[in-house]
Image 1 (cartoon, rainbow, N blue to C red):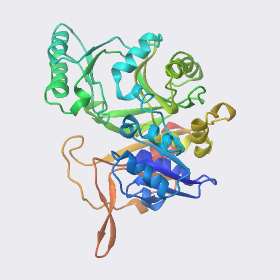
Image 2: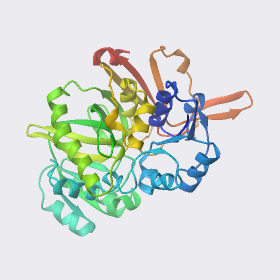
Image 3: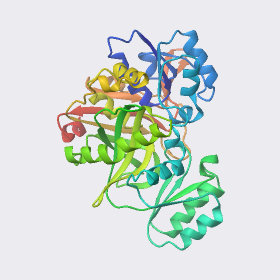
Image 4: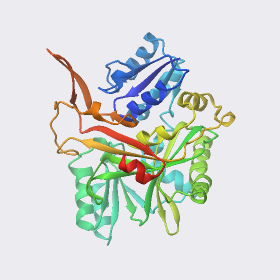
Length: 399
């Protein structure tokens, strides 16, 4: 099969790397790809906002199957368009992806289906949100309702921080229309974990869990980013917790979306916090996470192509998805200044010095043509994720 992967980050590089190991994959194209995917696939330049253009690329390259990586094309309806044109694709419809691109919708879905989550209030008027914060004492979480590249969530320790977060979302409009509506959420203490399940709309695979680090600095300090690193599987992720999460959070969500006529045929990603009272859903995503994909895909024993095709065809219940035992750790290398302003165009070297079993999944990289030949340079804030596996978390960290 010829497979197309949509996206340009380290998540997409990891998907291409995993697909490249499948004996069923003849060739891969990545749209638009990056400096790393170019060694495993053919990069095709195209804007991800041009959905018709993406479909045209799939037709012109005789693509047999497409995997959508990022959130924005899913929110824009790329899967719907591909399906209308008879192009097999892995990913949820625009309405199913609403569980990610509208936090207020996700909150109502959880309330209506008794899925445990923090108490929350939704506001689309700045004055009302400000008044609510002024009457609230203690920590509170402020979230832009829409998609904000993983940066629209503020864990605020007091009113001053919360008002500043509200200002960023609704006044300064740092996240554009994503901050037109905000969700003010109860702050909960506990361990955070990201949980992933393949779904064909009715069935789900065994779960895999990873933990990521969102804040820019060590010690969980500084502003949120798209993710500075991750590891799988957390030591507290035991069989009993996995069963509870599957039965009370993941399966009810899949069933609820199916009952609405918007089944998830793709990857459901639940961001959870495990409190003394049990796990609670902080957010849902409708895709592989980044940087979590970089540490869960190396642990996937099942052929990735088999899994994604089964999800799209509604046949996931007929196959076994297996996850390898062991640990995997990924650390993101980022440009100075990220998540704020940063410079690009710096030459990258040293990749040839990595141990054979250490992976480098590229994100903000590109090949730049120079008189002496193509040179790999930085082109983004998160530049790459360095990944290692081990029989234990300690071994993976050491590698």
